[in-house]
Amino acid sequence: MSEAVTGTDGRKARGERRRREIIEATLRVIEREGVAGVTHRSVAAEAGAPPSLALYYFATLDDLLVAALTAASGEYSRQLRAIIDDGRDGVDGLAQLISDAAGPGRARALAERELTMLATRRPALRPVAGLWRAAVAEVAGLYTDDPILIRSLVAASDGICAGVLLEDNPIPYSEIRALLRHALGLDRPPITRGPAPAPRA
Amino acid sequence: MSEAVTGTDGRKARGERRRREIIEATLRVIEREGVAGVTHRSVAAEAGAPPSLALYYFATLDDLLVAALTAASGEYSRQLRAIIDDGRDGVDGLAQLISDAAGPGRARALAERELTMLATRRPALRPVAGLWRAAVAEVAGLYTDDPILIRSLVAASDGICAGVLLEDNPIPYSEIRALLRHALGLDRPPITRGPAPAPRA
DNA sequence: TAATTTGTTGTACGCACGTTCAATTAACAG
DNA sequence: CTGTTAATTGAACGTGCGTACAACAAATTA
Image 1: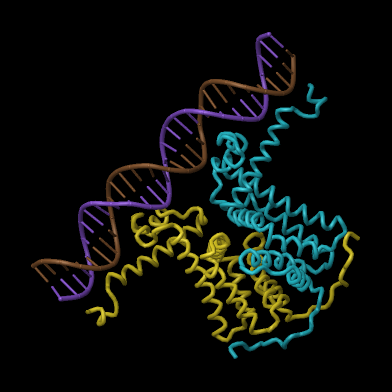
Image 2: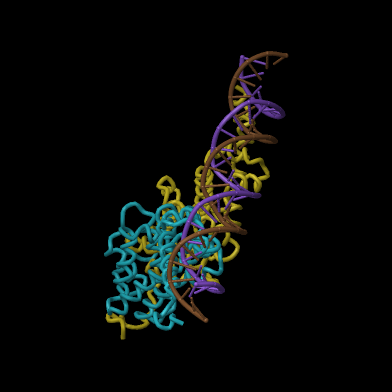
């Protein structure tokens, strides 16, 4: 029972580290080649290990993808929660995160999105994929109780992120922030034109 | 030159039909198994043709996916434009389309989304993927000139659609419509609570 | 009719994949 | 030291894939 002394089995500790390395390697592969590029072989090569090791930790490719999504999704949610806990404005922080996805964080954001897309087909991944949405909803809850407005912010951040990743010219931070604040109903801009109930004119 | 009489070469006419059949088979495969399930063999089997025929029309898998995305994206944009041209309210029609994606149109919507995701990695597909966004922006243009509000509607429809596909309990049409109208700044609901500039309370 | 174009098919090659498994090494327990 | 557990490795098997290619059938043309 030297375990009680050192805390854990040294073998298992190294194993856990190796496991994390493989997950990170998986995310790098997805960033570079997309989910389609994930194979036991490619991931193992990226991690500098023989393919059999990737298989030792993740018996099936699905396990590997679930682990990768869990890691990526958790990381994003943690970032957002950290912003809130630091007392910074939630919407500003959210805008910053999305703005990041247009620049340096683009590859990672793409990876996370691709994995989330995967979740729509495998119910087992749904809860994990919902972590980010829940975190955004939590931010919205700091500003309003209206469930519609909360949904609105969640949808807006998702849609803005998609636009940022799809469009060529990056959307500036200020605009992202304005869009998010509008979604929450915070800033009431002057009415630009009366609603046009009858299109086609 | 009997071509001038019949209009087109009969062989080419049948060929075009066959080509469309293969594209539709591809979309069915994607609906059922996702983009990952698309192979020359699986698509050909779905279309009831030998694999070599799928290769005759689409030399590479990429060509096939591009054609599928073009078809799916065009179909959606066409539906939205038809609504506008029929004189129906653009936002209502948009809400109806998104609501459909939660029910009967779910599989197709998933397929289109997966293909669009693919577009973020291949610049050649970007213009095609943008067709839907352009159509939505056009709808928004019927209500406002404010580019922020236009972007807001595009982001909202995208985000709502993502939510609809990800969540278990379907979002009702009325709520989708309310979210879209809010994005456009049409309905100004009563203020639920003053903005909370200081979170962490 | 013969020649040409176009669509269509079957077969086959080489490769990368997921997965299995027995063997090996290292860390721990008694 | 002996046994046990856990991490790690290399080799191999079968499968399905993309792709190439030559041959065939049918429509069109001259």
